[in-house]
Image (cartoon, rainbow, N blue to C red; front, side):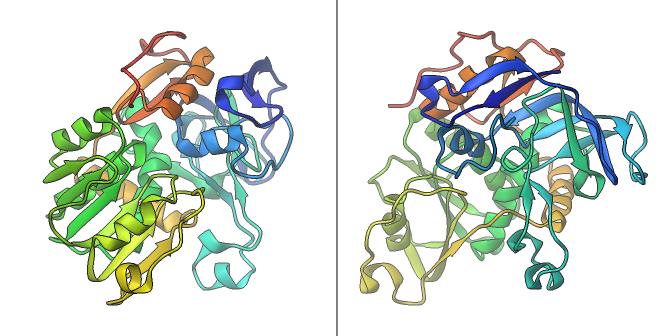
Length: 350
């Protein structure tokens, strides 16, 4: 099969991804093999490729927003039929034995596995997953629209829960890319008053189109105190600014799997009045099932930019440079009219 692999992580501009041929994988006990149609391009893929996340294996195939059809089943697998359309997400397996798993917090499992980090992912024509960790894809969504929901959407939903957001709250969002644009649709459907701070005009205009009350650039502050906030930016410098914008009792959720160093905080300015910071660590399968149900009921839609499969390196470079609104999606099966390698979907953010 054709696939992209990371031999040695490094800056994306240095081309750490390599397009190659690999043996077709075979599903083990309780696993299914998926013929990949589309795979979303997530910022976590960038962190894996550039080495922000520790290297877990050599010749890794990235990608964890996978949509495809089951084409082979391993021994004992019976949840899906051959030809069923399924999704593969970040959380690949958990131990089921540790304290976290036993109390229903499998996202905090002591011995987890992850698609596109500890195990090969969806930047390939074929991918294997334990059937218990695959999702049925909502029928009304096409392959391209469904892909970003499988990580950007699910993690954004968990971040919204961790922020303590309640219907009608004033919600602040720092960073506005693939995850944020899905999360705010849920919040707006629940009556949120939305305030967005993001670095580039591409993201700011996207936030305005979706219904933000106020949009600003880094360093600017929302005109009202916020009940809840989420930072999708992998930049620790935004944390003090976001905390300073919270009303008493407000919570800031950090949605990224990787965040650069957070500057020192002033207790009175940033934390007093019971303001809190909460991290977000992976998701449970229940989070995924609930989000996909809500996305269907509330008509959450993905803003996507299609790329050819052989342009995965360009898609990650464009993501790093902020060249598009929403989420990039690789068409692994070549079924759409994706942007060709070398095309530029939008001007880069300053």
